[in-house]
Length: 253
Image (cartoon, rainbow, N blue to C red; front, side, top):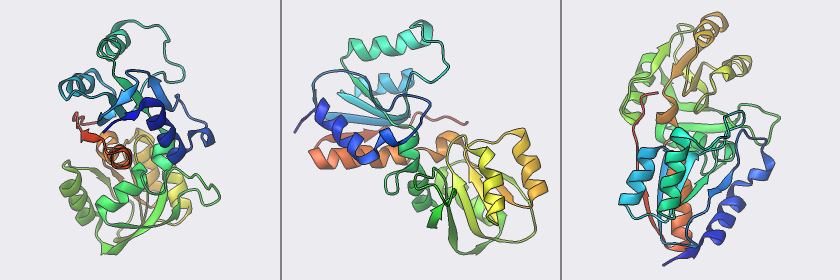
């Protein structure tokens, strides 16, 4: 089976409503390839390695969370950017990317999908008055020590997270936001959460955990954002009866 590229992108746009987000990059179709799509490859970031893997998989389109044309970047098509774009254009492969809309989606999003992986029951948004809150809050099925929960994360994500203890209590309530959302730790502490999890960590994050009295877990930007794009691509592939393959180009950051 196949679907037109325009119909595929329209379906993704309808699902994720990118027009409702003030993002740092364009969402949706970033590079147009062939007009019909039969095979989709999904991945976290549109690196050269992912494009090469998609070529080997004979993909017509690549769906990612981290695409191109970020706000403030050099717009010149040279070096790494030229090589990536040249590969896509040479092989007539489309690049479709969704950033914040994919983080925040209540069913397919990175945060919801990570909660499913880790066994967290979602209770609401990290920003209670924001209907499109990117982060979430929730509870574990039963209280766990911070170390036990970190061990659980390591088992599920396949990498050992950074753990900074903020108090001596176990974790019952937790706030989280995948990717580079470490600054949200103050929002989590203000809500009285036992712990906060993000992908990336900065030097001030550790100090905030200590001074605000909240456990902090840094589980990796890439590792925490592998699941939303898989869910999105699987949803679209199922809707149009397309082939879909998730290709994980590992990244320790």
